[in-house]
Image 1 (tube, rainbow, N blue to C red):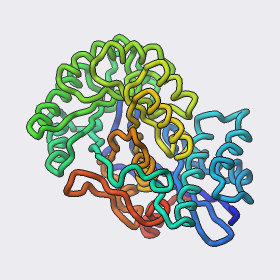
Image 2 (cartoon, rainbow, N blue to C red):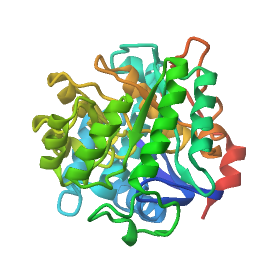
Image 3 (cartoon, helix red, strand yellow):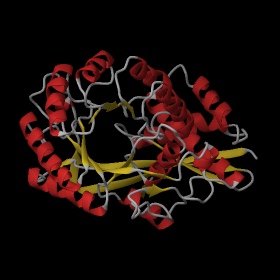
Length: 392
């Protein structure tokens, strides 16, 4: 079997009322879906992250730069193909959009291998578990969404059976050196640190009623001393973990923060590749490791990151915030790990997650998310959904 073509398509969804994290305001969300074609008719499905930039750039790199590298290769030689893409792009890659583009192809190759072998991807990777524990990931800032509304939101997740929920914090203009003023829609959904603490406390109060836990995500928006000050207050409330509090390059600060808190520091989803994650792990700058299969080099590279985390006794919780293909890929990745942590289930309204596939991933009555058992990723695209949201 040989690879004969690689194609990418862009899907676009516009929000009626945008959502925001500490840095970004999402008026819309995009997904770059990848297909790898073979001479035997099998097609592999993957996804490449396009966070923070135009999806057209990612599509161009996949089709014009990486496709010529992989066409003609045996798709079962996944490690060889990964290293070939990495080597050929080293002079202007080694991270960023190149790794995101590589990720989509890598995931599609694993989907192909599973289909050829007649096995789900997670079983090809070792099949550690058939189900994972998910958490409800939402609690974004939005116009008109105040403390009462966000508390009601997390209550709705606990009533559905989730035992964990995560909300956004950190969109605080008073924090020194924060990048909000440089971002699009910088005047939207601004909150003081005190308001954030009130929001978190209200959510923790709801969680206590259900015997559940709240996590918070500051999306790289704080400096070290702010993170330490806020972190100590958050851990007193019973917050389960503090996610991505500092800038990616402030590894020393993250290590200082992790040492100062009893609460785990989780991160850093925005980081790219094994070697950068190695810095965070070896310098004890994180307690929970959070790569993303569509962003940080595909399933192949994320497996390397997870093994490193296991060597240091750390759980691995993938970041998951894109389409249903991303959800499926990260789900298979997590279920293969002996050091698997929780699985992120984005709960924001998003048809490219809930309607894009031939199946819909739902929380089961036992509170777990069960793995699809069909070969490969176990999913196929819903072409009606593709037609509604695909752009040229």
